[in-house]
Length: 134
Ligand code: MC0
Image: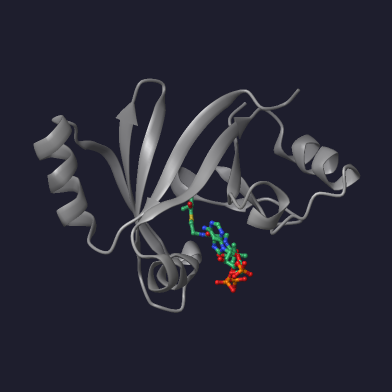
């Protein structure tokens, strides 16, 4: 099958600097990449853990996906991201299985990688992101 790796786990936070300070204090780990992604309405910080990442997400505004999520749920697990070698093939496969997609076509995420989201209603209430990693 096309799922090849756990790319990252996205966690919604209110204050990126405060969350990063806690990761450093509790686990002695720091972010390896930080970026504002206007199209997604977030600032992200990536923390390398093993072969994957923890992605901390601070919303740029309340009326963004992460801003709405925080208002409803508070801080916590926002999504799980899987690395796939061919995103178009992965989306074709999910479509053929009748899976509810958020993105019918890939868009650009952090580090300009091709990504697509799958609706949380499709699988155990978990928002899934697919990240193309050839
Ligand atoms: C919403 N729901 C979630 C959820 N967000 N369930 C699990 N995990 C989440 N993160 C549930 C709500 O509880 C609700 O369930 C239903 O979905 C509809 O939610 P809503 O609050 O009415 O919000 P919508 O429908 O306007 O939007 C939800 C949706 C949206 C997931 C479609 O957030 C979206 O398009 N997300 C994909 C983009 C995204 O999340 N971007 C930020 C990360 P009930 O049962 O009450 O109906 S960007 C990122 O991560 C990039 C930078 C990257 O990695 O490169």
